[in-house]
Image (cartoon, rainbow, N blue to C red; front, side, top):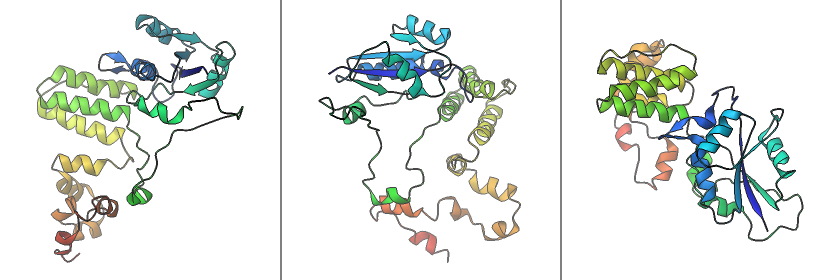
Length: 266
């Protein structure tokens, strides 16, 4: 049985053009995906299916096998179909090129040891909900945004006094968003701009409170900027940490509770 991993990779992403070539620790993002696939013993071959010469050039530079495909495919699956017309195999594993943190061990869970009898065999890798709290955890699908990681890098460099690298990473996000580049003034102004950029970039993704809490400014910012008098009248500093979400209480097996919060008469 022959199994091939195919990594569909197009350059013309609407949200992040050139995403497969985005820099991740000095290598193109797709290089990390390719290496993960190469580490799986169940895979006989790995190739990148692209329609762009820039991605093809990166493949040549980093020694990654690739195949040029039509630019007319509407879906990654269509690109894999084209690969199947020229690359013979029993099974084709579709592996997306924007998953640099994928664990090669995950492939063993989805790839069969013997050829399935069903000629239309399809398997999808998902997470098993093993904990009761997973059922009420709206964020159970763990999606980690690349821009989130880039802004974390910018913040780390700013905190460690490497302003050049901090500005470089910050401007990677700003450039992708089509806005003007940030010009360094001083450390405090840089950190403030990174905080604002996280607010703009991750708007509506339920992360803002966690950012404000770790920066120690949640109560101040929320109190100053809310336009709801009822919220201001009932807001207390303890709300920065309490009440602990029900799912976290369940996850902790009882180690966490809201007794301290209840002492406020809530």
